[in-house]
Amino acid sequence: MSRPSPSPDFEPRIADWLEDDPDNAPDVVLATVLAAFPSIPQQHASRVPWRFRPMTQTTRLLAGAAAIAVVLIGGVLLLRPGGGTGPAAQPPSSAPSTSPAATGASPSGTARAPLALTETFRSSRYAYSVKYPTGWTTTPATKTWTTLQQNLWGSGYNDELKGTDIRFSGTSIPLAKGQTADQWLAAYAAGGDVGSWPTVTIFGQQGKIDYDGGPAGGGTIAPGGVMFDSVVVVGNRAYNFNMDGRVDRATFEAFLENVTLDLASSVSLTQDYTSGRHGFSIKLPASWNVTPATKAWPAGTDAAAPPDPMLDMFADPADSSLTFAVVSQPLAAGVTSAQWLATYEASAPSMPGACWPPPDQMEQVTVGGQSAWVHGGLAACGFTEAVVFAGGRIYEFSGYVPAGGTPMSRALFDTILATVTLNPSAANDKR
Image (cartoon, rainbow, N blue to C red; front, side, top):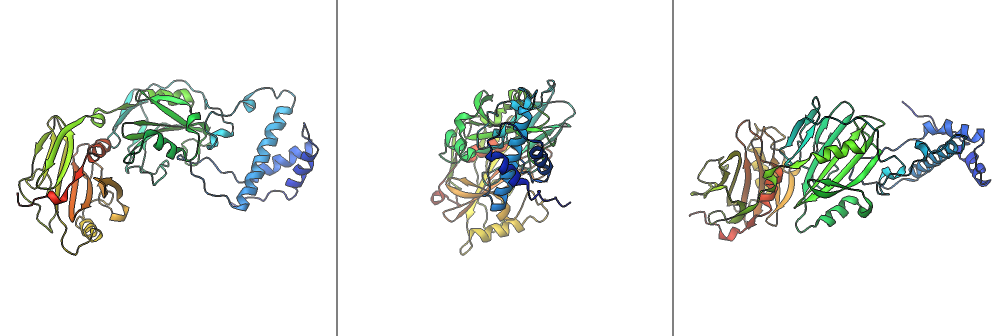
């Protein structure tokens, strides 16, 4: 549907009025503002992290007109008899000035009765649990959030728990190698003042509320509702929890109080293992069993699934879903890593596309100081795998899951990968 253009005498009338330094609004000005306001395009708040594109000249003019309209309407309402100190006179939200929350939305949101949090959602990808009301639907994340993408609602990067008019979302990301919690928060803030963000307790740690009850953006579960967004760094991971819809701050904090880290994500890696056959070192939980490889991975063949003697195998004796395997082989002469990956992707035509996408659509991380391509991660895949090239060798690091089981949590997978040291020159395929 086409949108009517603002009245051509809209800005001149306002300008003439402002030159008189007014303390009230004549009826003609108020009528002009109210008539033009519905026709001015409104930019809703976008989902964090906050990233704004540069404005065009047209956008600046429209934004300026919208801002004038908001100020005038609000001012007129307050100056009218009986304007008082109602909702229109509330102070701005305590959210940082770089976010839309600073436009004056109340940080309390829409007050509502406490919810009974009786069910438990466990995130196999991000290794946390949270309680939620009976009757809500849950949609686990299907993709791992990285710093390259905005984790918008419906993007697949978030676990989403939904009622009729409230949604709770959660996601997590590993810190970059050598990155501190303060550095990650500064990068997430994108120029915002982290020090001004309200604090909140998450996982027993001090987290931050970076968006505090401002207008929810497009895609919200309840148009006209509000949004709260929080972040916390625990160990080498950052967590982002969000709530949108007809919700208040108390409800958001009640959910955060029930968020817990799963034991597997915080397990201590104290067992050292060095593979003389495959040329790498790794740290593992002390209780895990280790089965070294006893034969080579033949060049030009697919690596076997466990159990197989070509694999270095690591497994939790108390949990069959916690199985990790590593295998490597020399890269054939004249074959590039891109060529190898392309051949590898084509070797599994029957696999669901979400499990085995083209290499340029795989997530990229760093393992042992080298680029790695990650795929899998879903129950239907049966694995989460990182492929790494180093010193003329191909390495596959894989977390396996039994049929119908729950994939190894991505948090644990990433934590183990972060301990890897690659030493391809020490590999001995004849051992």
